[in-house]
Length: 211
Image 1 (cartoon, rainbow, N blue to C red):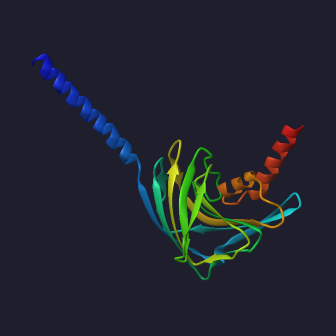
Image 2 (image 1 turned 135 degrees about the horizontal axis):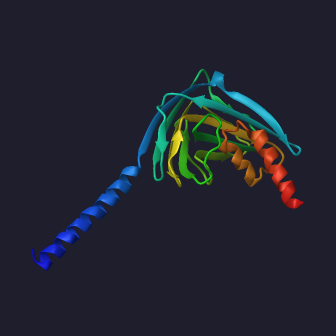
Image 3 (image 1 turned 60 degrees about the vertical axis):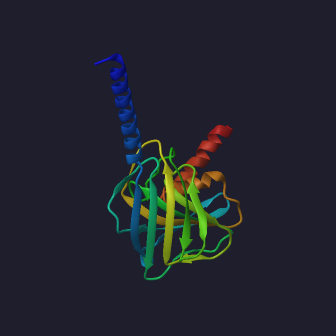
């Protein structure tokens, strides 16, 4: 074999290897299509005080999917059907709604992840949704009714490492009077299950820093 032939063979092998790397990289990204259901009669609600502000929360565990792994670059397409009524947020000055993907119901989500997508409630116009530090899709409503029996959501995820999804919920957090601090977005990460505990812990940290 001449040097020229060897060089061509080496170049072809390198190109093949590079193609394999790109193929492997592309194979990591997936589109997860979920058709989920939940009964409005199973919505769990709670409330807690932070300062002089009353926060009200609610969440509903959804069913109809097989647990899966969410990885960097993955997309989701989710159809949610609410039976036995609507999933309804109390109308307050500040209203946050989320579709949450987690390893356990109400579990803390990885803060090294982010999402970007949109919602369509009952076939209505698309509204933006996302999260800068979790695997939820979150949107904001200001003092307007939000009640739906069907939801279509799409989202893309950026993640530092794969994350197992065993639970999908819809949830809300609403409050009056005080403008929510950026830190209250963290409440969405846990699907609001540990909302009071998380906010109390954050306040203790802030007090320690101030001291």
